[in-house]
Image 1 (tube, rainbow, N blue to C red):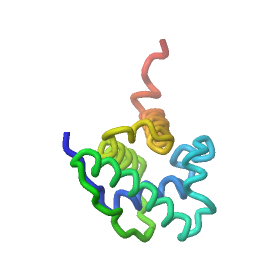
Image 2: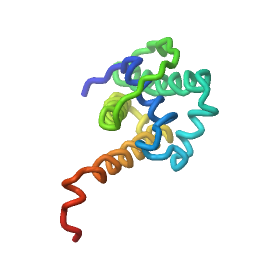
Image 3: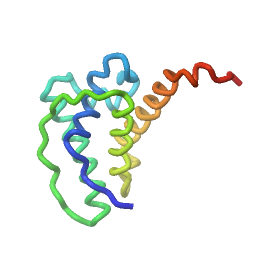
Image 4: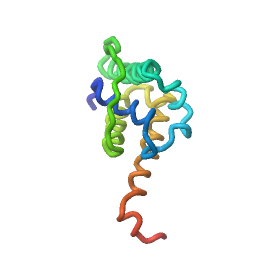
Length: 135
């Protein structure tokens, strides 16, 4: 498996969705690790949240390639996306972080749980799911 540091847009999409999902996304209050990560949701605290995500991503990539690359510079920018794009961005991100002991971290697990909740949210909105037989 290869791993890489995701781009700023990926981090921005994830942080924006977690902080400002506007009712289309699962409520982050049900994910205490993520709620704590976001802080008071000011641009400064969202930048810190993005840096925390980059730290985990960088740690995974450094583990994978036995390197000591620094965490890339980051400043949060709002990057709104639809919930399917957000789900794919989270799945890409967690895949890139799935090295060493990173999947055991609370933040990683919270993102995986959030992605599962978001996936179910997407499926619940499908006409095919609504019309499918119960049982």
